[in-house]
Image 1 (cartoon, rainbow, N blue to C red):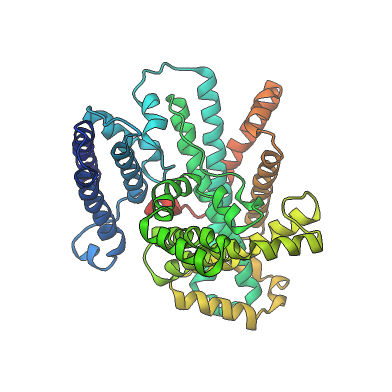
Image 2: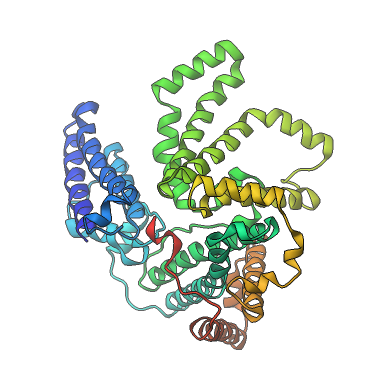
Length: 450
């Protein structure tokens, strides 16, 4: 709580200072002082607590859950005050509520002050419709977490703990399970947070939009952790893209390589920097840096290759923007690429990630998929069936939503008996197959420590 209190205090005082300087029409350099000072203090604290994994235990310190989320949220508020997009809040308790609102404190979503401050500071009586929708989100969130993520967890941990004992086919299966686990875990927690907030009358922003149906890597990041992507776009990408050094680079590129290069070089470099930050945001370690590096390299390269890719699409007739085979191919291709990149997130180090990839390629041992090895990964046949059924339900729901139908509204428009039956089935499955099951591994939310 000391770190949270420090952030609240510094952001509140810096916001008042920045607002005062803005009203006084002070110079831009002077107005940057409170902004720069507060950002340095808070991101410095974030870096110390998050990336000193060896020093912190010796000092008796623990990583604060959700520190990245509320630090980014605080920085967004302060930058908006500096730019004049929002007025500095004079009430310290309102700032404290904005930065420490309990549903989003642990793992987001990263909210903007102008999006939720009105709801946070308004009186809300009990509302049946709001509460009903909120409870639906909460039950669905716990279903994703306890039925899907926690059943996938023992498989992932068993494989990662001793990956050299398994063939490449089992490792690929583990990466598939990890992709499912991390989505169900993170999105499940966000659904719980959104549901709780809705019950008390606060509307939080959505954080996921069917990421498994992405048709490209860039499209995936527009669907995954949406609030982080929006934050990085507004507060990092655009300032970088229009900065003086990149503007000079754009003019030089235009002279040397033509108008298109002059336009793409600054955007490409800014995009690359954003994904480096994404990698570092996930935690310390070269494997996570490399994860961000590869995402940035692939997406930036795609900007340059777009004319050739467009010619290839026309020549082959395969395009992710067209329904049918082209879209299916793009979805599978993107999921496979993400699966490879997930090696660097799941592994404990860059060396482990590269060794896992090498083992996957040169020692596949496909027979292990059929000889009962899958039932020796910390989960039995019943648990595997539960995991598959839960994942199928998740994918069906995402597919329906992808087709433009809101699953929540579809449920609400159904007969009350059907609504009750479906919610009770989800609730009972959570109770029977998680709390009283030997297959599910109760674990903290993965992104709670980010």
